[in-house]
Length: 194
Image 1 (tube, rainbow, N blue to C red):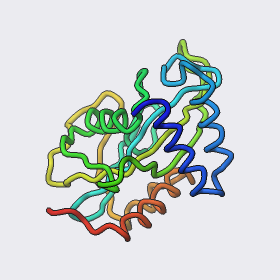
Image 2 (cartoon, rainbow, N blue to C red; image 1 turned 60 degrees about the vertical axis):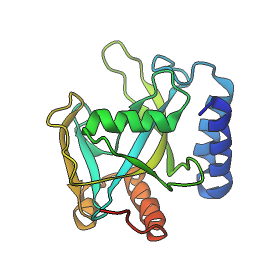
Image 3 (cartoon, one colour; image 1 turned 90 degrees about the vertical axis):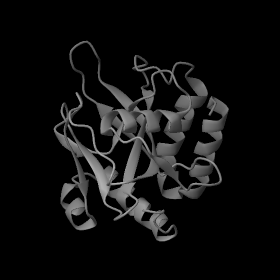
């Protein structure tokens, strides 16, 4: 995926989500105007990150990580490290953080589709100034039967949460919004083969 491809995906998202136009426009402006927007040291106005809302093929449970530095349950993801292909970055980060190998984007056909967008502020720490993450999020499917990573530096724990247990972990609107969107998508897409 090139920068132009990402701009096209963002424009499609912009048209489909009128209620999120301010966030979408902010990310579009960054990608269109900032040549270094995929580099983690692009602090002003921030940089693009990529993440994955991972659902179980078997049960539709959701995999979350208990983020070590932020001390919160979050979706898996991270920096694009100079890569304009945000789906590839989301897949890479999800594999690195979870140990899962077989991750498939949903929808499986028709090319990549953004599940959600979010811009959130990251506080200053150590040598990094405060900055914004412009997060592009995708829906991925995996098998609960595949073993998870035992220990990852960024994570205190990795847990599959059922829909009932998930509600108690969603302490912020950004996560709850992804859960709602994923539920709508999955209602139109039956689980894959077990």
